[in-house]
Length: 509
Ligand code: 6PG
Image (cartoon, rainbow, N blue to C red; front, side):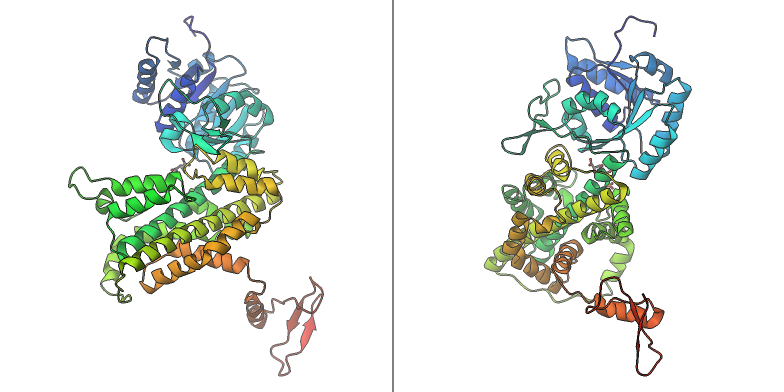
């Protein structure tokens, strides 16, 4: 460093959308940030915005022209945050930092949507060179700017270093109401309330939890989309009318960021045609992979998350637009019924209750998955705390998360959220409408894969005797795969000699 500028509190690599907003958020909270980006335009944009937002105060973001300069702008041990695309870019930057002279007690924090196993591998591979820590971030660009939900994990010492900064910039919740305290004003950040940034556990656990957050996000979004389609295609409602329904729902137990933005999207007019914007958006969903990772992990661990998997499939089938357009002219559906005004209102209430019950099941699946992964990995996850840090800042934020956190506070060993007395009562009250909503949609030929898979999950989970007895018989028949008997000790296995006319039972072990 050649000037007399005081050293910065934290270094940042990557001034893209998320990086820039996290940097400005840190600066709002009084931290001095040394920033580096290979793309000079991005770097200049963040410096200009910081200067503009500081007004007559000195800027808090310092631009660096190399990794070496970045290190020199920080006091040792260095604390450097990466906001670069998940994957190879993270490794590339880490190697550049090694070349620039990073030390064994320096800390590098990855904030991308990295695959959790990559994080575990990176912590090991960079051991002795620097401390690789991670913090999964949710909340999109506005969250990053004014308060994200942060899921840090890895080396506990690194956490003590970054904790004050992360807790300062994180979203805040009013402890009395469990609701987010939101203020979107540069230079006037929220400083009161409970921060949505808690240490999750050992390396990889934070990114795992964020992955499941995204799986829940996929399912939550898909459920809302299915309800929208029933209103649009069965009831013939306009985008504006559906927006009004969502706004009303947002005043009750379904209150959430995703319902709120869905109402806004539906109420927005296309600036070019004047039509509802949603009607000019092509019905092909994109995806970056975190929902898929969640579904894959649930299959690998044998912790069912069918509604999350269905949400991924729903995006895949939406992407088959050309095939669907062709099939629509060939494949028959049912005849459409006309709904009276009273029946319309009834169906809308059914959809509301269906959405609520299915949402409970999605969270039950997500939390069950995290519990199973934690047992497998030896992580001590605090589910009440995870629900708490999702109450504000993140994409799935909802009043509902307060009830989830209370459920785990009542019983931190809870096997499944569905077994919590509050949630089991909610479903018992609203399930009839859920069933009717799914039945009505199916009779009308509307795909409601997420709503109905959640219902099947609920029904399977509450069924003491599933038809897997027949399945075991089938497996034994063609593959001698053996089965247990209901009248014999657990773990003892049997096989039938299916080739023998008398089908004798053979004890295997
Ligand atoms: C968040 C979001 C964020 C992002 C995902 C989803 O928590 O802020 O989940 O991580 O929106 O990348 O992206 P896709 O829908 O494209 O998979």
